[in-house]
Amino acid sequence: MPARPDTAPEPTVKETFGAFRAGYTERPADEDWAAILDRLQRAPEKSADPLGGRVATALIDLPHWGRVVMKHYARGGLMRYVSRRLHLRSRTSRAAGEFATLQRLLAAGVPVPQPLLWVETGMLFTENWLIITEIPEAQSLADIARQDPARSEALIPRVVAMVEKLIELRIHHVDFHPGNVLINAQDEVFPIDFDKALVSPRSQSELSARYRNRWNRAIAKHGLPTALEFSVDFNSLDPSPS
Image 1 (cartoon, helix red, strand yellow):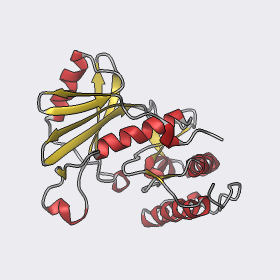
Image 2 (cartoon, rainbow, N blue to C red):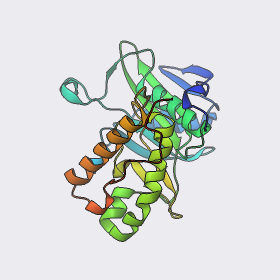
Image 3 (cartoon, helix red, strand yellow):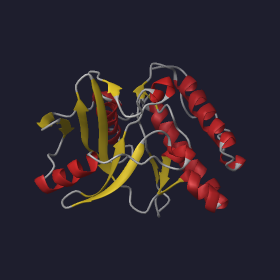
Image 4 (cartoon, one colour):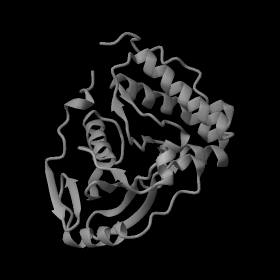
């Protein structure tokens, strides 16, 4: 059985760059940090795709790290009317939490983007960002479904296998839908956006139902082909907690 994702180490290096606090496993080169800092100080641009969620993303070409994705975390719910960009400071920011989750998933053999850096600024109220590697030549499954329904339907068994892997590891991706599944040119599957994901105490059968229900609601809400719906119960999994 794969290693449990909660056994992987947390980031070991934290550093302050002026007004910014950052965590990483490989320190960014000075030229990379200068480009990152320039982008941090710009207003975020929210995705026009309703499946893109509240997290704004930007592609940046860095001298040493190459092309990376920068995620800027926004507020939802009623608090968005107070501020979409500021978060009450906590021990672990959303960016640091997702950084750690991606590390754990990579250690368990799940193909996710490599986390490079999390950044936070502010004292009582903070803004935070996550920088991850880009998945080259990738589209979301939602986009593929709109352009090529037959290809998207053929990919579902691979997506199901990925969900089974996450359930086996007890990872609850709280917003798993076709917009958060990337497919590259080789039809490989990469789950993304593990913001607020957690190692769940629920049984595998309970997690199976949550994944299926969340996915199928998104299919219906956004008018994607019904052939993409999860009809399986992930029966290959042991329904009882270990």
